[in-house]
Length: 226
Length: 207
Image (cartoon, rainbow over all chains, first blue to last red; front, side, top):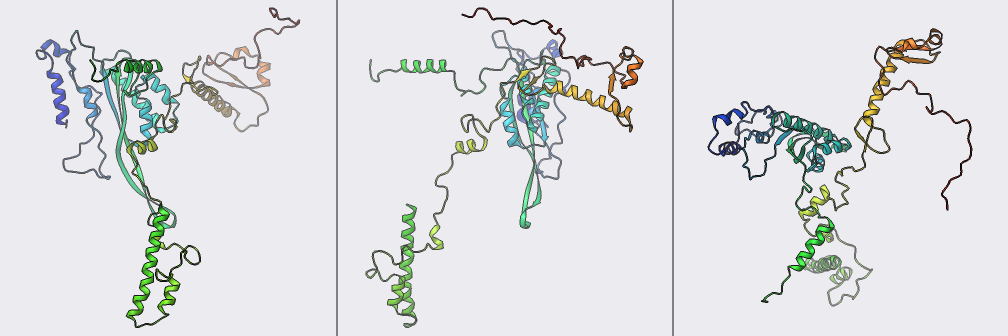
C-alpha cells in the first residue's frame, strides 16, 4: 500500500494546479498508471518481521516518485526538468562494493556513465549499466523525455537488501558464518545537461580561488572604526 | 611512561611479597626459613634493601602487562570512513574507481576502446564470424585428414573460381553473403604499385 507520506505528496502536487484541474487539462493527464512503476512485491504484513525464509520484500517508495503529476510551471518560473526514478531490487551483490560504482557515476551524463561502466571490471558495473538502460527507456516511453541521451545521473546509491547466512567450516573444526549479501540499486535520471560540479564542496579552479581570496582580503575592516 | 608504570607495579608486588612472608611465619609459629633469609631472597625490608635490585632487573610477572598495546584514542568517524572507503585525497584515490580519460573512439564501429587493445565490438564480430567458418570447414572435413588448403567462398563467389583451381583446394561454400568488412584480398601487401626505378633524393631547405 502507498505510504501515507508519499500519498500526501502526490495529492499535494496534483492539488497545486491553480484553479483545480479543469476538464480540458484532465485529458492531458495520464489515464493509466505509467508502466514505469514496477510490480511491487508482496508487502510484508504488519507486525511480521523480516525472516530469511520469507520471500524478500523490496523498496516500495522509490518508484512512487514517478507517479507525481506536477502543475504546469508559470512563465516566470524555470522549466521543471523531467526525471525518472528506477530501482533494481535484490541484486546478488554486496552494498559496500556497489557503493564504489554508484558513486563514480554520480553527476555524469548517461552516455558518459555507460561508456565508463564498460571499462569497470566489476560485476556491479553490469548491473548498473542495465539499470541505466532500463531507466533511459522508461524516461523516453513514459516521462516525456525527448532525446534519450539528454539525461544525466542526478541520484545514484545502493542500500542493503536481504542478507542470508550460511555456515562453513574452518581449520580445526571451527565454524564460520558466510553472508550472502543482496543489494538494492537506486538511480534517478534527470533531463538536461549535467551540472559542472555535482558536489557543493568540490574544489574550485585556481582563478576562482584567487578571486575569492582577494574578495575576502578586500572585505577586511578595522574593528571599532568609523 | 609505560615502563615507569610497570616499575611501580613491580615494586608494589614485591613489597607485598616481602611482608607476606613475615605474616605467614607469624601465623604458623615460625616455620620455614627464617624471615631474614626469606626477606633477603625477596629483597629485604626497605631499609636493608640495596639501591639496585640484585641480579639485574626482575623478570616481568604475567600481570605486568595490563597496559599492553591498546588504542589510546578513539578513531574519529572521518578517519574510519577514509580507511574503509577511501577518498580522492587519501590514499590518492586508489580505493575509488576513477573514470578513464584515455578511451579511444573506434572509427569502424563507433564504440570506445582502451589504447593498446583492440576494439571489443570489432573483435567479437570477427571472432563470431571466424567460429562460423571454422564450424563449416570442420563439418565438411569430417574425419578425413587435411591434405589440401581450404578456400572459403561466400554466396556468389563460386563462379569466379574455375574447376581446375577448385580441385586443388578444399572448397567450403557458405550460403551467406560476405560481410562488408571481410576483404577478399588478405594476402596482398599493398595496393600501390611497387616503384621499379629509385633515385636518392636530397632534402631541401636545410640551412
